[in-house]
Image 1 (cartoon, rainbow, N blue to C red):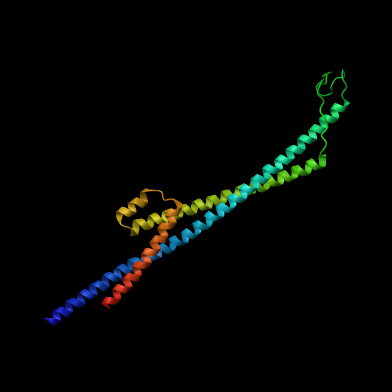
Image 2: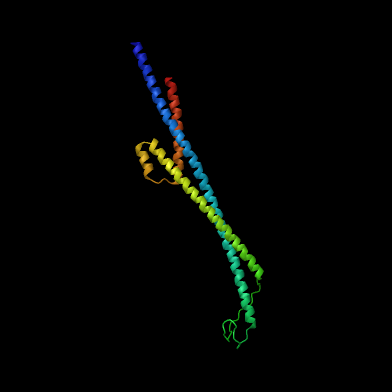
Length: 212
């Protein structure tokens, strides 16, 4: 009778060990899959930060362009006003204007106090064009960074959905497969699964020791 009891206990222990080993194998499969997802999360976060940085650079560069354009426009306006003022000095009432032909000149343009030279105008134009080139390059770089971030997001989304389909209960998996997860939820899902799987493996190891 005792032998039967001992055999039953032994059989039960072996069965529990087999169950634990099966769970461990499944847990290790999850862990391996998660390692790939963790790498994708890091890649996505890096691409996200790079995109924000490039977008900020573009924003700063376009503000500089606007300032340089304003300076150029003011100089250009002053330059034209000065030309018009010089022309006005030569006009006399009753004499036709060489530009419009009018013989009456009730409001003659005054020469501005500070007149930019043609050289100053050319210099400011070059500064404006240089700022525009920087902004154009920044725009391209920001666009490329955003494109890479989008590809990383798509890979991470695909990875999360694949993991859910393989390892989560049907109802949970269907919910994840059905909806479009925002960025923070994608990253949080991977983090939570990593913690859950690690805890599960530790519990399995403790359970095995009881029956060994």
